[in-house]
View (cartoon, rainbow, N blue to C red):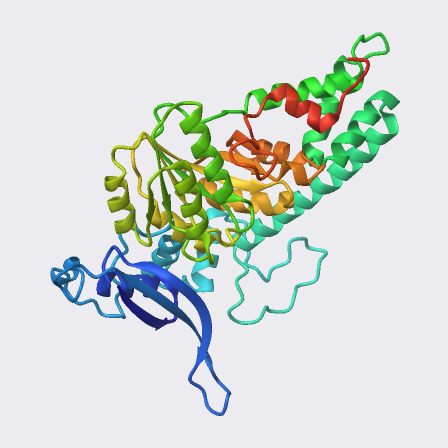
Length: 433
């Protein structure tokens, strides 16, 4: 394997150098910020250190695709192949190719053409207001800044309205519905969602209603879940890419899925792991593969993934275990996506722990949904009493619930979700149902 280190100013520059010198099969091993140059510890410049590697081909000192590639000057990075360049890198590279931003004066001229009444960023909006002092030179007070400020004001207004509505719910709801509202809040359901359900139930609930308010809320949850559960793995699916942050039990979940498909559906299963970052991660999956009697391939680059799929061509279903990383970082998500191949009859499944905060889950999902994420699996249900994160995630993003893990035993502690059972777990039982 050929390993090379680059000291660059930006990631697009690094990507251009890596692709031109190491080829399209190169993979980034690590990135970190460093400071270089200066005098006596002063005036040091911020740089990025990127370590990349590529597997050497037999009989050649460099990858084959380098022999036909002309040298590329560092000042003019080679365009990044679409299949290998993540969205995050492409956006930055596109910004560099477009050149520097237009001067502030040109921006003002554009605003004047779009709005003849515009009198410049320093003019007074109302005649009674005093004229402001000139802004510092170079500051951007264009229409986009005004729009961002307007968006923040609207979000603040929505937040205040939400708080007022929440307090109003508590004041006017009958005790029966207040109990259901309290349980939803206790479970960590976001305000927007529980208020929606309470409003819908309040419209149909009266003193003469045979069902209790709690039962009606549970029915709302059941209908919500039924539309968002896609349990199991489809029969025509051949490759399942399993991703997830660190510590969610991803490798154990893969072992449970493999065992289920083998024993219940009699499918021939193969395993691939790209988790070479975590100590003993490969050995853990190798142990599961030996117990189940299934083949295992270890990959470190897109070329490795392609060869592994060819060696497992006789398998009915292949699970690929990806590296557990901090996927709140969009760069790491894009690096992972470059390792996955766009194969037919494949799907990506994201594993999340119910012991994590909803806010963290939503940030991770926001990055992953850009790359074709279809399903989620929740783990560690046995380690928490708060299940509202399931509802929040399914409400915010167009993903389906595939499985729920309720323990560490392989293959037993893997539950196929059922809407009615799950709504009972969230809201509890009601003797008046």
